[in-house]
Length: 392
Image (tube, rainbow, N blue to C red; front, side):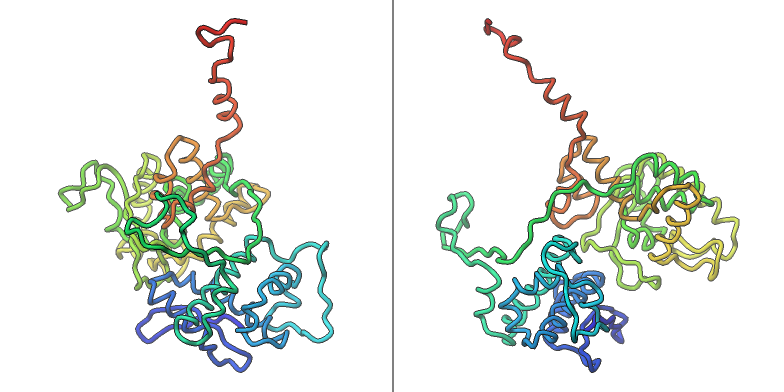
């Protein structure tokens, strides 16, 4: 079992799962097509789900279980995920005679990865039940089903009718860890190590505007509004900003993960970076035209829109020139923006909107006051002797 990309005649792309004979696995393919086209999910989401489902189906095949039986034994599957590394769980791994490390050894996958795999498997099983490909009894094996009669009135539906709620039966505790962000010193070092105005703009778009690399490479010139007043252009958003728009036809494969278009405010540093990049781009005739904002300037094909995967290579090279111990990744720059916004006092709803998160809970990782702010909060509380009317 292995994940495999699919490109339809219309140009739309998604990921599916193939068996050992390179035939499409129907139960997995039906779910992944529903995610991509029925829910308008991102191609990257189907890629992640396909790899997770392939792991599950691989485990079922190697342990002699049908996938329906495997869905009822997710506890065993979780143990296998935790201790079966690539040599045991890979698509080309040899299963016969292989001894796995048991509890006490270093885990092959962390709790977050295991929970992500289980999310994809549960989604596939529930879709199969809804499509009539499996018995409805499987849902009770995956979820604890309860009614809402024990909930407070404010938490129940307004119509007064009894509802049901589900809680996943299988889940590992994920320890709280600080968000992996790029430090301010690393961002400054990257900017100094950049070899062009275009590269500095890319760093700032992620570190000062919170864009994903797919959103950066998908920007069109028409998405960027740098005027103090853009109303003459038909845009009601005030001051300098850019619009993140999800498009399916980008030839460079760039993809805005969020379905909802959002406007991202820009500060003066990013505006200046746009100005210097525009001047740099004008000096290269083959790159002067075209609607894509970020294009190849120094390697062929000149003028073609940059691909998202080149952003990581660009940052890795700049990190080496800056003498950083480890290369800064695009997501670390985005995390830096989210953390800085939260530390500056922005509400979690504002952080979620700036980053394009569909759920506010996705932005919770950025709400982590630093020790200095925690100490200041404690020191601001008056001591008992300072309270009016309190005597010793």
